[in-house]
Image (tube, rainbow, N blue to C red; front, side, top):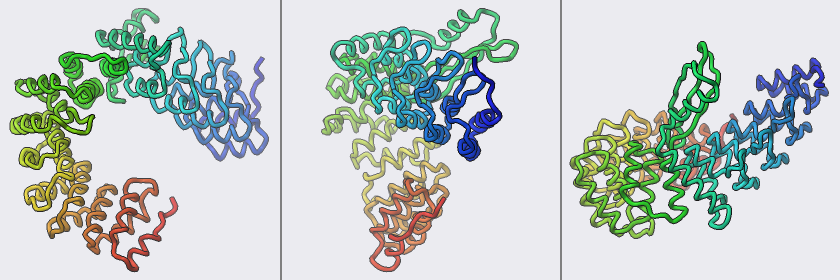
Length: 507
């Protein structure tokens, strides 16, 4: 029989629940056991783990809590599994470092890997595999993690498993690959929302209200379906929708050559160039890099449908570049230039500007610059990115475009434009003034790039900005690293010595 907790134990659980580190330390020093349990048999360590309190987890472990001790009335819950289920990666690392076994099973046969996979947490999964978890160890029902990841529709999770050997070409690994591909293809043909709703209603009966949410994350959309009764949540399920991308990745792993038309159809069904279903299809064709792919993409450039043109432009942007030679550049650039002249829709404009920048042909500068004033911030950012390293210093129109973009209302556009301006092979008054105007930019990374550009030109205005960034910004952040690197451009003397000795302020 579980004993009623003492007042000190109650205080400990209340402090852990509230994330009160100092109170937990005081109670532990006062003699409250780190292994304490509440009236339900829950351990303090398990509560801290599922609450994503990494600091408290470390405190309890240091005070003697057993990372392997099961929690709950039936002893069926493990701290590691509880942390993995919530995607609490820092907690997972703390438990593993303290000796938690990565492949321990809790109630119903779940392992921490299985929880991380079915919940779609690739970072947590990676931490478990780094500590030696078995990427092929079956979860509940005897299904391998790779199949569970394919069902989830999480491309990042599939990639992590493959990187750690879940798809080894012989034996169980090959079987897991085949089964996982079949599962991904099966879900490609299903309506995820409807499947989740039907499953919940079968389990809990009719008469419930359903609420659906769609969350953009991990390169796809996660569908969340909840059952309500009298306005109160009863149950819920969620699943990703990146099954087409997962299928594309697994086909590549198995050496299956999927036709251009099928890969393109997957991308167009997704309809969003930034999502995994699109990008994985494009990447598969890049790697293929053959004449047939070029001709298919070239034919799609002549389509009247902007989305088909966008897919073709994405394919042409790096076709054959996997070998480093870019063998299709001479024929791809004219096609992209023509598309650029006709591009109005943001998706197509982004694709053609990116492609022209990647091919690095200075003759394409007019077709890049024509989108400088596009209403879509993503297009303007890609203009600045395309000009980085491509723009000759004497190209006045290009310098003017970057100067204009360096004053853009969108921080990401300003940052890319200032980075490009800093690297322009020119030391002119307009370039210096455009950089100086961004020394106090609200975005620290942009200000650091501006200071770097001025330091490279040995403009004394860089010194004060570099001193401020070195002192005030995150010691591990991009802005401070950029500023520290820029100090080498400051002429030898007192200013440089002072900058070299500037330490970040205590935070």
